[in-house]
Image (cartoon, rainbow, N blue to C red; front, side):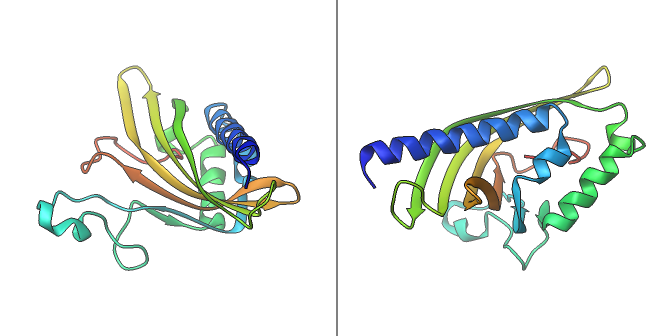
Length: 177
């Protein structure tokens, strides 16, 4: 891939991720769901405090341990439907949320060319949530995404969410990353 093509792909990826954040912040959850492939894996392992020489135990394992999230599109759709009922106990009244995305890196693209069909991407996030009068949560971490081009546009085929904290201080995880 030429340097120009790489810059164009990176710009396209960044715009996609920023648009996704805006959809979430605007509570346009049905539109947000459309950004995922039917076979998506949406996964957030738990982080543990372990000695420096046991780094392989720092995160819970995909498909083997309990994780914060380990979902497919069907489960994501059910979570969205629950929030949209207007009677979800943790989201009534709705939270005010701001997603900030930065440090976007295109790790690899396949096949090589100006419009690759799959792109591995890393990014950093900060999610700020305010509920009712006094509840405030700030979550920081990184995401590892696999974006797949479907009918000329990106869709998220895989998302791994890694929180920087090992203890979750939020009262719930009803929001999306």
